[in-house]
Amino acid sequence: MTTRQRLDIAVRSVTGEDIRFAGNWDPLPGLSGNEHAIADRLNLDASRLRRCRDIYEILELMEINPSELPKANDAPSLF
Image 1 (spheres, helix red, strand yellow):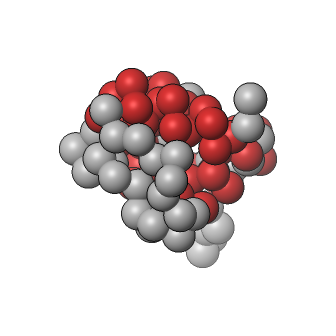
Image 2 (spheres, rainbow, N blue to C red; image 1 turned 45 degrees about the vertical axis):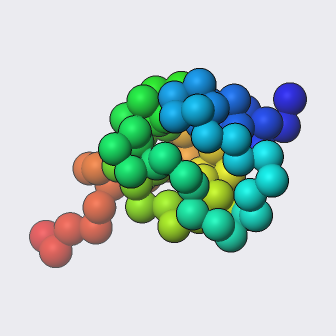
Image 3 (cartoon, rainbow, N blue to C red; image 1 turned 30 degrees about the horizontal axis):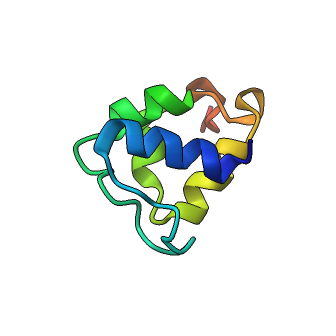
């Protein structure tokens, strides 16, 4: 199953929206207000999902290995 198919199934199960014919640079329909439920289905962080502007950015986020994501305590320090 492709990443796009996993996203379509998750969105359809949460919002009922069919995104199969949506373009990659279209905003994800139904994301607003459902970001936590969609993030749970995709095993993503809801705050990172909210920052995505379009379907393409969500697909990129889904393909990143969670161990590669920076941790909150990895932020550069002035000291």
